[in-house]
Amino acid sequence: MTTTLIVVAHPEIRSFNHAWARASADASLGLGHDVLWSDLNSMCFDPVERAAHYPPAPGTGRFDPLKAQEAASESGRLPEDVLAEVEKLKKADRVIFHFPLWWFAPPGILKGWFDRVLVHGLLHDIDNRFDRGRFRGRKALFCVTTGASAEESAHDGREGNARMLLWPTAMTLRYMGYTVLAPEFAHGVHGYHPEAEVAEFEDRLRATLARQNSLIAEFDKRSEIQFNEDTDFGPDGRLLPDRPSYSKFIRHQP
Ligand SMILES: Cc1cc2nc3c(=O)[nH]c(=O)nc-3n(C[C@H](O)[C@H](O)[C@H](O)COP(=O)(O)O)c2cc1C
Image (cartoon, rainbow, N blue to C red; front, side, top):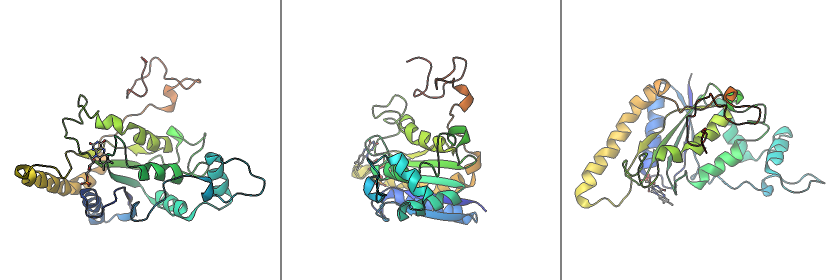
């Protein structure tokens, strides 16, 4: 049985983002999959990692987030909201993230979800990351809306290459061991289309929702974002000269 976790980061339940997330859920349920749901805004998920989440043990000093996460997971004192998300991640074979691009990145609530839920010690540590990440064999997909048009979001577009903007988020999941699939975009999603173009815009959104059934049905055939393997790097952590570069973030020339 396939289990899919859908993580939505958008404050309005009547938004296109939510409609698209529900389309992912419906398509998955239609295939007989189990669906888990994390609507971060409706859950009022607290995205701010801070000492108050970890009532101090006597004698502890300054707040070290990595050590606090590790100690809390070892002593069974992880915050309830984090624990609930960790349990969903453990069950999920697939994680589908639905979010708009806000200031060239996912909304802060999703960044904070990563900061808090990807618990150091429990879900990753220095021996369990990248090729040896605990989530290897599992897949993640981003379904992303942009206000900018497809042209403005292209490799030479003035809003910056949307695929590159997602690289740090993809790398977060790669660090955890996930295979990260090529993102799906809906561009030009905003409420400022001139009256004459609204019908075409709404048709475009409907078509995106309608395509979600085939996207989910072909999930396992979808192309993947390429990352270097652990063995592509030398002992100093730098890309070996004869190994491929898949991204401008990790390349041979500065
Ligand atoms: C705070 C904020 C920042 C935004 N930044 C960007 C951006 O960097 N790039 C972009 O293409 N659109 C940007 N937008 C537009 C959103 O991506 C757009 O409103 C969203 O994709 C529409 O989806 P929805 O109809 O589900 O809300 C921004 C919107 C907000 C509210």
